[in-house]
Each structure stands twice: as structure tokens, then as C-alpha cells.
Image (tube, rainbow, N blue to C red; front, side):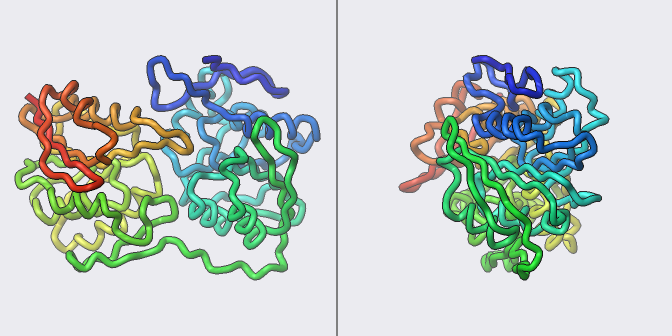
Length: 377
């Protein structure tokens, strides 16, 4: 697969994260190309334009527009890291790049705001709320996405929170949405973070906008909570922690253990921090780590890893993230350590797990999910 993006701003070698052997997916899509072409054709950006880019998947927009010293906002650690790598690959100056996580507010208003429409409408809603104060009457706003991902609710949110919209023609199944800021509208209340109760533990669980299953405890996690390890050792990892409820249950069961909450979503980790604070009177030892899975962990440094792997990355679906998590877990576990995994029945995780660990035991199952245990020899 060609890894070179050719646009009016130049040619850029771009890579995706996580790195995969024989990866057939590009680090950009037709919406990125459409947007960069439109900016060049219409000469929208001036040399002194203050530019904000939101939800740039792997840095294609940031690389193409590096001359404008963009501020780049994302909820994804992988997106930020890919952007850094792609700047270096293309010999661009990292000092010209300002990366912000999704919960950090910019320091200035912007003359141009480019937003790739995210998979999660709740994240879009949150971002529209948070960023409106950083618009001015003449801010050029362009939202971009593939047509299949631009539901009617995208238009409704943009018009409800930012202002009137008009759309481009579709090109290569991509579309641009142009928004005119309207400051006469009363800004509705930002509904995030949202909360739900977990009465079994007496917890009220906070969920930022980009957290999976924000409104209630999902059935997979509920099933996993019924089948947590009986013994876990001193160092435990909640891998892909989401709102942290699994790690919290582990901390409750093993109060002397250190729990590491790991996710690539900044909002997930922020949610986990809020929720773990409920356990602070019990003196929980906890770390919150934004990373590409377990890439920052030393080999043989953990006794137990519990994981509910995602099977999608943004709009792409596959088992590559789970496969990486399993391989990393094998490296990070101490001898005799356990990886406990839940997955949908159709994903056949046991085949990958047995190949990596040499063993895989089914602990529980229901009509939809299966829980496996693997021990490192």
C-alpha cells in the first residue's frame, strides 16, 4: 500500500499506529485529501492564520499544514504519537506543533478550525461545547468526514451548538461541512461527564464523552466483574481500562496491590481517575498511563493483567489491537502470571491466546461472551 500522501501542500510519507506488518490501511482518508485540496484551492489560510485541527487521525492534516504552526487536539495518545513520528519522518519541525489532549483547553481564539468528525457523537458534542469560546465571528470552520460516517445527527449538533451549515458535493465518498459561527444562540449545557450508579459496590461512575458505554454498565464488563481473579499478586494491570470500573473492583479485592490503569484515550484515563478517587480512603496505589497498550512496561513486571480488548480503531474494525495486547501481555507478565480476557464469542480469541501463551482455559461463557485465562510458563 502506498504510504505517500500527495496534496498541493507537498508529498508526505505517513504511518499509522500501532505499527503492523503488511498493513494495508493508509494513514489518511479521502476526507483528509479533500480538505487539504479545498484549503489550497480557496487560499483560505493566511501566513498568520491561527489554526486548530481536531481529531486528526495520524497527523495527515498536521503534516500538510505544518507551515501554519497548528494546534492539534485529540483524545487519542496513538494519534498524538503518530503525528510526532510523521513530523519526524517528513523532517518537519516538532517545535512548530502544539499537541493538546481532549480535556485541555487552547490558549487563544482561532481563525480557522478544521475538525474530522469522530466516530462517537458524544465526543463531537463535547468538543463543540468546549471549543465554541475559541471561535470568533470570522473563524473559518470546516468539518470533514466520509459520507457513511456523517449522519443527520452530525448536522444537528453542528447547527445546535456552533451555527448554520452548508455542505460540499461528495468527492471520493467524502464530504466537507462549512459552519458559520452564530453567537446569538444560547449555548446548551455540556452534558459531559455523565454518570451512572453501580449499586453492587455503592459507586457512582463518571464517564467522559469518549468512554465506551457511558450511560450504563455494559453487559460484557458486568460479566467480567463476576469472574475476576481470586489471586492476582502485587502488580495488576487494567489494560484498556475505560472508566476504570474493572480496576476499581480489583483494587477492592486486592487492597495491597498496585493497580495500573492503561488506555490510549485521555478521556478514559480522566474518567478512571475520577472514579478511583472514590476508593482513596482505602489507600489505593494506582497509576494512570496513556500509552500504546503495554509498550511502556518493563518485561516481567506484572503478576496479573485483565483486559477487555477493543476490536475497532476509530472507523476501522479488526483484531490487530487485541493481538498486540496479547503479545505485550506475554512479555510483561512474570512467570506464572495470568492474563484474563473477555471477548465476544465470534472473535475466537482463544486461537491467538493459545498460540502466544501455549495455553488457554475457558473460565466462563454465556450467549455472547467468553472469558479466558492464560498463564505465562
